Image 1 (tube, rainbow, N blue to C red):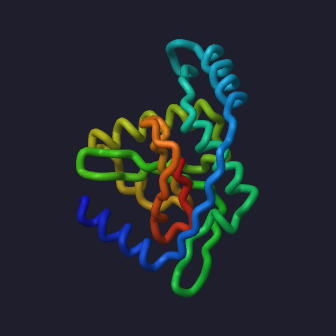
Image 2: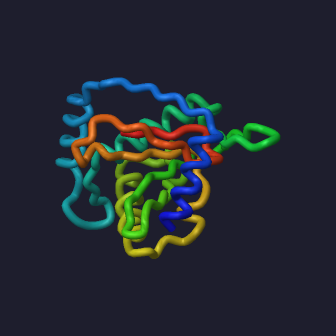
Image 3: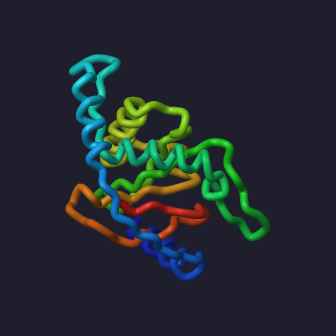
Length: 167
């Protein structure tokens, strides 16, 4: 698996134009909102959730992709294919490498649904129990290393996607 990942990423870096934009943002209001929403969540049961910053980043990207459909696309030899659905791949580290489970129709989901979907997909990814349709496809990827204290890194686009966010 690592060999395939390395080959695909090397090919992407050599054949797909990459440019990087970096900005610093203040997320105090986001962290406050996250704490308020988490405090309102039931502790157990069907409606329970615990939002992460990553869940909120997924939702923000989904809204941005809906507003900017040219980014929600893939490139082929013959055309740019714009997607109707906003399906976001999220990089998850697993023992054999990296896999990108997909939050389908992320723009149409609420934060709690995104959070619960991500927790489910992430745990099943680490257990090797994802179905191919749960990690193949997606029009945009997010790779997040912020929880490890990383303040900046340059992600490599997952072809045929047109963009990837590194946070």
